Each structure stands twice: as C-alpha cells, then as structure tokens.
Length: 101
Image (cartoon, rainbow, N blue to C red; front, side, top):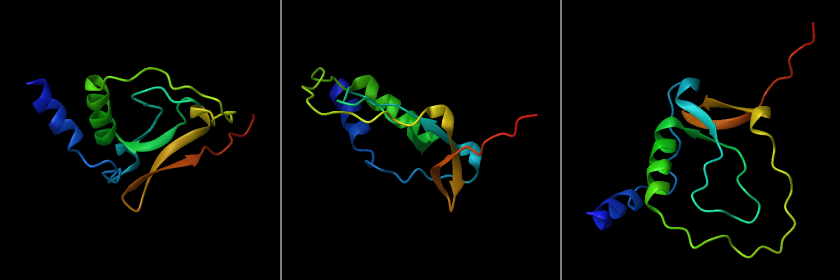
C-alpha cells in the first residue's frame, strides 16, 4: 500500500504549472520536504499544488541534513511578498508599501 501511494504521489508532475484562475487560488509557501543548506525561500504556488507537495512531504524519508559549506544569503521575508494570478500562473510579487497615516 505504501509503495503504491508513494508511486502515485511521485508520479505527479514536478512543476504542474501552478495554474490559477484568480489571486485567491495562489499562496506564498516555504514548504521544503527535506532540509537544504540555506533553508526555504518563499515562492508562489497554487493551493492545489501546495496540497500535492504536502502529501509528498508526508511520505518522503529525508536522508538528514546535508553537509553544508556554503554561505547562504538571507531569503526575502514571506511577509514582504504576495501571490498573484497572472496569465493563469501563480507568481510572487513584492507587496506595495502601505502609506503611513
């Protein structure tokens, strides 16, 4: 059963395109199934693709933290960006600064 579930999850396209119809179909994610050297950076994805990624992460066994000898740049804050649907694709945009009152 586990092997069948794993095969189904891994058979999903690596980049299904993050398709959307409206902004509400998109979100900013930092999901990263297994740890990397520099940690997760935010990215835009569709809610449907995020659900598939979370299912995949639930069954993947990570080999452990990689040996890292690189200097990482600080990723952009998830709070500084927003997800928008542009030409039926989820994209990440910087949020417009709000005016102080």
